[in-house]
Length: 273
Image 1 (tube, rainbow, N blue to C red):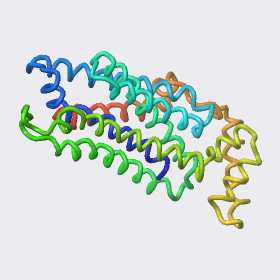
Image 2 (image 1 turned 180 degrees about the vertical axis):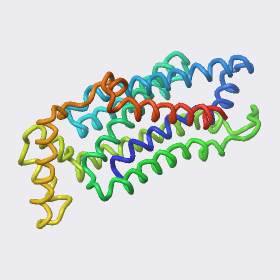
Image 3 (image 1 turned 90 degrees about the vertical axis):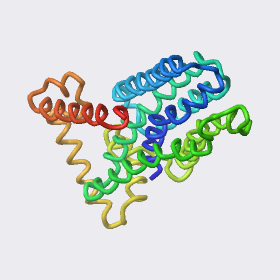
Image 4 (image 1 turned 60 degrees about the horizontal axis):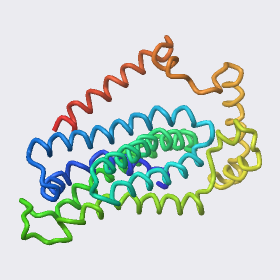
């Protein structure tokens, strides 16, 4: 659940503009053409950042998923601070880009963390929790935007019109603060696989004892050792590159099928609407 908060950040970030566009249009005096163009520019900056975050995170997973989650929460705080500090639109765009980099990276870091720390018999349920967190995150901006009058006029409540957008965009700051608090206290460790690969047997044993019953620990550690040894012998201990993913005979079929499905979902889903 702690790690799944990163998926909630992704859901929130992806849906955090469209519900506020009418408010920005009214406050900044945009006409319909400006609202459309600036809105598309805003979304593009965020999604471009998310794309870079997804691709970039895959290259630095070796430093540890726990450490990356700490850094990523600090990055998202910087991005949101840039967004809500001023109504200067270029600065908001810069903040949206940084925000996008962070919530895009979360999708890679958190998925990898869950995959490595969950027992195989629980990966399905935990994967479902992650997707549920993403949906709940996307629900927040739409629900909070119900506070806005329709249509917005000069006679409407000053705080709602002038500053409530900062409250909406401030929610991810609270999510990050909560995740950081939990990561630094009750969930202050990386995955067993990371500790095994880096040879940190002391931390590996600590994590195993935290999540498994004492009589289960030896068997779980033996299975993990067998997995790492098999990967090392087959040359698979290193993460597959993007070239391997898209062009290796063993991977390319499922990779392109997955990408096609994801693109189709986005074109026909919320972005199409």
